Image 1 (cartoon, rainbow, N blue to C red):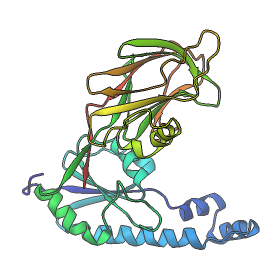
Image 2: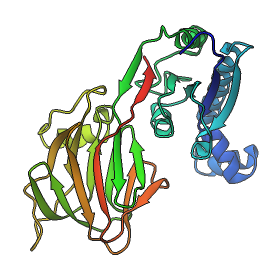
Image 3: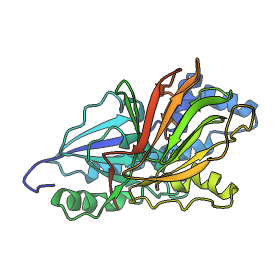
Image 4: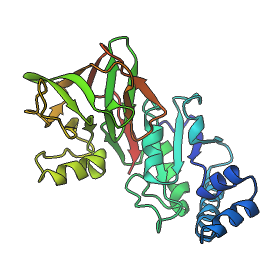
Length: 299
């Protein structure tokens, strides 16, 4: 970024567990009363709430007074208009960065970990005390930026969905998903629990668990490698259904083609956010591959 341009810092967070409990039960004391009846207390979530808001306040203080800034919560991401010169500061757990990434168009993201005792911090490696320096380095173009690969699904009507970790293709309920499935040099008609298409960032999560259960049948890509791994979950070997191909990899020049054979309930969603999804009804075709854009994460 150019030093001569004044950026805008966008602080992004999720509601804390404490805030969600108070919203659900009306007041703090009512939440405490309900949890007490279950043999639980508010102590842990209230402490995490305090740490989050202390991190938010420290984040606001780290922003130079001459810069613009705005604070939003995760549920506002799909309505928020990002600017080209924005610097995004995601304060929270790793998943918040994934939730934010698909709404961006190349703006740098600084992940801040408000509670290292609670969050692993792979995508939120920075402490609040270092944020002022990291902001200055990012604005001056001195920051080390990782270009993390994303995965993209495009429907035949032009609708798109991006994800940083993985895309899920399947049925919204626990019913079997039926679809025609084509890859580099073959195709099958399958019935399964759905398809997972993972990036290198997602290779530390859902894809890693599936791959480990299958004795590491796929060499999972690194987060900056323009490649993906895919897994078919619990392919059903019934009459008319094939199970020959249940895993593989894609590079930047290859893709999966999936055609839905589900009358109702077919969906595609990313990064575990089922509410932000594409409808994948019967006859709809989806092409899934390496996304044209990537996450620019300040390392």
